[in-house]
Image 1: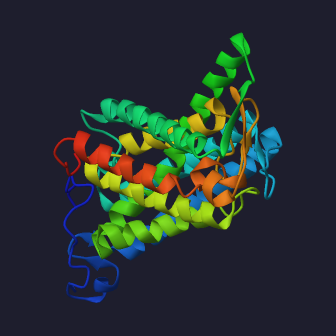
Image 2: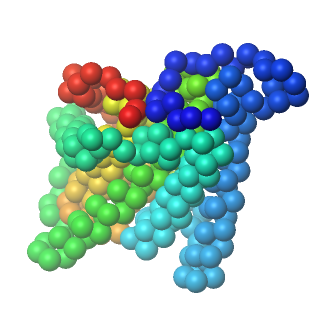
Length: 310
């Protein structure tokens, strides 16, 4: 099958039935979307498990259940395993479907510029949210926690770690899976399904709460829009990484229920969790929803014409 060169093609007629028994697995555009998604998950899980066992024996690495603090070591090893699983599963499916690996959002002449723009949008969006929380009297600045070389060192460490986080989660949920499921059920049902999964994957974070999961689901929809609008994962990588870095390191708050080891600013929250975000962090605040809508508008008006990748 030739590479259609499109990240989000028009929905294929998945119900079309070629002659013979192949119709259960093969549609008019090759492997049917549901089987492709299932195979991706199987490959992802197998690679993740293999790398996880390897990390356990080599580095004695394991992620505690319901943990509330994330160290650089946990972040780097854990996210590196997920990146390998996501990229490996995507590569395997690209071979099976005879498409280019890059056809799932990993290339393009604008890739670096979109990534850089995403970094700016993500940092500014989280900073706007902090400003709103401060104005509402539920976020409080306590001073600078780190200074000098130590602050720069941890800042750089967490930049690298959160780029891995962005790549791991976006490539897993909004790369091959989103493109493939969109082919079978159209983009927004696929985005909703994967955003619900995105929220479910955060249930293991010790400090996460119910409304925090709701905002994670909305964030998943926001990031799905970014990928659909730009035809690339690049801006989603940047927004995700910068949002988490600003929240966790720069402003020293919880992030999806987790606190980071090493942060720049000391702060604390007060008042109702619905307003402050509580143990989930600022992104668990109801004020995060209008901020995410503003990010959608910013992407809509600055991304140029919508491109079907590549």
